[in-house]
Image (cartoon, rainbow, N blue to C red):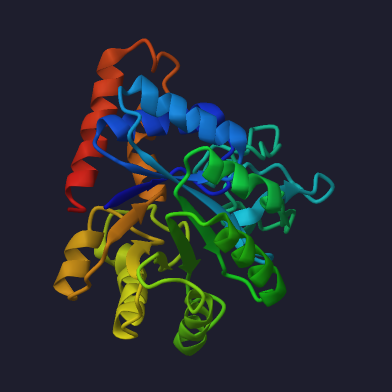
Length: 304
């Protein structure tokens, strides 16, 4: 299973529509989306334009402290307007006027890390999950995912409870080891799946979240290592690799004996088609569309 991650924080409807259009034509059947009505509608429109409505959607939310629900904020008083943040942003969310387009910002923190003037802070932008999650399931979403890379267990329990009450086909837990070790990771997963039937939960082993900017084995190493931790625990879950995933992920996972259910690719999958989907004449230029689909197809074929 290949999952295209449009970005849990990506609220750019046109971008999502184009990505879903391209990857649907390339053969993708599962798309990870921001938990917003307009994004789901944009994704459905992209799939319809591609001539395919039989696709699945995974909607993601995060607990407090998780970078997936954060947006960059620039303090103009501290900003020296060096432009480094704008140059490094993978989603073109920061303009030359040093303004952040929150709809495009995915919370990757690259700009914050690059800013020598310490002018950038990451600010949480949560959603009304009690309203939006039931809406999503009612409108055909069969996968609900919770990013749990944070220490607020109260927020985790509240959101996990709502996800389970929505009774999706699959509930997904996205976790990495940035904030805790293997023991705590497994304890948290075991506690969460204790209320679910076997094999109705996906554990998305997020090696290094939003780090798939390069296509090599080193970049995807932690995703495979994280999946191995989950696999060795022999839990009644499906394993999906994520976080630094690229065209090398499947090869490395197979070399390491990982029995994965799927691979979720975001940063790398978006990067390789970006020159085409950002073209001003994308919808009118069939050659540009076909080239994007060709590149996307090559990536998908490497995950099989």
